[in-house]
Image 1 (cartoon, helix red, strand yellow):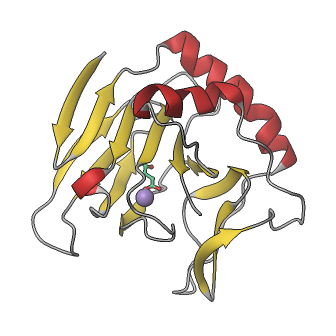
Image 2 (spheres, protein in one colour):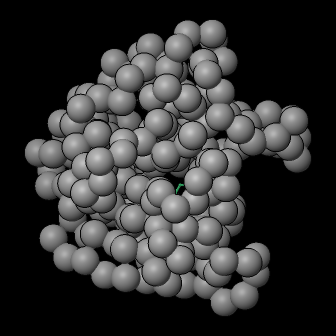
Length: 200
Ligand code: SIN
Ligand code: MN
């Protein structure tokens, strides 16, 4: 495991070993069964290429009218609880007593990407957002606290954890592309990214 800081983001390379990654994937399975991945629409009218779902008391949601947190999955079922092995990542990396309200689960299939954005649908930006990468490699791009300007990128590999907090909490970030089938963690390939958020 090694730690580096890039534009204020704390990047833990190899926070989870393969056994821990497998434990997290196993814990995700019932969550994905109860609250299946879906393709949200965006306010721009184009569906996201990433498929999403959530665990926690609220889940992140997007449609024609904008981005927000919703109390239930689009099917109407409540979001499943955040499984313990996932919560332990937050506890371990942040050392905080406050736990997240939401674990957003993003699935990147072949060709999926995520444009540069800020995470700003939460009430209090003094809490960090913690991101966990699983499966295929993803090229993570980090910009500035305002849109535009020079950026830097880093490949995130399965088991890496990124803490986006402090002065970097509002830094723009996105995922340019994934290397489909670069990892064997997910039998069908693809990348899962978990982001833990204190919402309320
Ligand atoms: C996100 O910003 O929601 C996802 C980041 C990632 O996939 O690494
Ligand atoms: Mn984000």
